[in-house]
Amino acid sequence: MDKLIQFQHVSFEYTGDEEGKASVPVLHHVDLAIRQGEFVAVLGHNGSGKSTLAKHINAILRPTDGVVYVEGIDTSDDEMVFEIRQRVGMVFQNPDNQLVATVVEEDVAFGLENLGIAPAEIRRRVDGALHDVGMYDFREHAPHQLSGGQKQRVAIAGIIAMNPKCIVLDEPTAMLDPRGRQEVLKTIRRLNQEHGTTVVFITHFMDEAVSADRVIVVDDGKILMDSTPQEVFRHVEKLKAVGLDVPQVTELAYKLRKNGIPISDDILTVPDFVQAFQKIMEA
Amino acid sequence: MAIIKTEHLTHCYSHGTPFEKTAVKDINLEIDEGELVGVIGHTGSGKSTLIQHLNGLLKPDSGKVYIDGTDIFESKEILQKTRFKVGLVFQYPEYQLFEETVEKDIAFGPRNLGMSEDEIKAAVTHAMESVGLSDKYRHKSPFELSGGQKRRVAIAGVIAMRPKVLILDEPTAGLDPKGRDRILSLIESYHRSEKNTVLLVSHSMEDIAKYASKVLVMNQGTVFSYGTVEETFSRAEEIEKIGLSVPQVTKLFDMLSKSGYEINEHVYDLDRAEKLLMQLISQKGGKRRAE
Image (cartoon, rainbow over all chains, first blue to last red; front, side, top):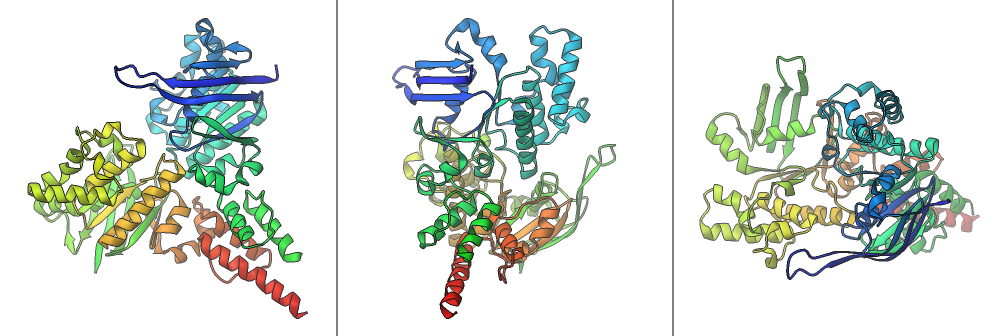
């Protein structure tokens, strides 16, 4: 089972529940496959449909048309919701909305307790998850004593304690300062590399997308681009047209190319740029 | 004359408890009228504590705050006036919208100021224009609007009081790149047309380099530096040492200079970067032709 998540021709609309309100189509015939172990960044402006897409991965939303499979399980099957949510955990934007307990370790244990797992096993998994996110020393703290980045890491620990195959993070860094953003990103990257956890990471920060294996750009409920970061960020104008941005060095290389300088078009980082610039200067 | 001045400003939280923490200590700062100041610093660096003193929401444990030459804690009347003179837009201000219509929400401040109905109407119109909201939104419920629009309504509510100083705490947090640019360019053009003083708290060095005239860097409850954008980013290494970032182009030029290219200035914006690189490339071309 190579494909962990599969979207087949998925469309979705929010139905107008009040009389006279038309339904709002959000996703249009999306086809998408995500393999086990991938680190996928999802970009798109507000209202592009990227959060709607993400919520389909763990059956918070189900397609109006088409099918979503998680490890071969159809997410529309009511009886399988818990099976799906054990495989795919979700972390949201606001760290203050996700923590339910008054002590960090109790919060991490919350999901496991609901599954009726034996106390000794809960202890083992909670400790393991807190170590994985670097928050073990804070296990007896109250969530309100933590910074935003620390809260998000506790939220992530609560998810990984459930041993999911995939974590979907919907703008987990949007409300954090640069240090908090780095903490969260590092944590997720480590989970991906060391545990092989599949990561679907929605963000507005292009520098975070640069480090993904794969970047998906969503616009108007469709997948506009789906490729490596190098390939996606090559399309500076196309990205700007859909309200997105590129890293400063990528834009700078683009400006030089427009001036007729043959600098390469797959620059994403400062060292990339320096290397390419040296080539130009030595040519 | 300085519109904002602090003398030995110190503030402690949870005074006299085991959780006592000095949030800002001995801050001496003078900000001239008409500046657009970018304020940067970590969570916990004291920047939020500092800005809450500037309109009297927090009272210093010791030290003074002067706005327009007046000690704002001198009397209740002065403090009251300061609250209108210095407009503060909090983080995620859209959560504070509460009225039935955009117009009523924006009019809330001016009405409390005791303006006449005509004045209120003019203030609302001006504020809506300043944040790029067309008149058709006037009678809409703020809750029908998109996130970015709601935020602009909230900012308009503060602008409508015509503050001499406008302070915005991370006005772009959570917005997408287009929304970020929109808000920042609106703030810039508002600043340019009003010629008032604006303080902009941001985590984005790129944005600060692009829009601000001065930069205030806070670290561990003290002022690390206050100066022009160029002065600030000329200390790129020190700024990175205290855990803050500098714009990516600044890093790039540092690295190019270390690789042996002749770069005699600190670069922090894209246009300048483009010009300098084009110069370097054309000099190389020139040399080659001369050989």
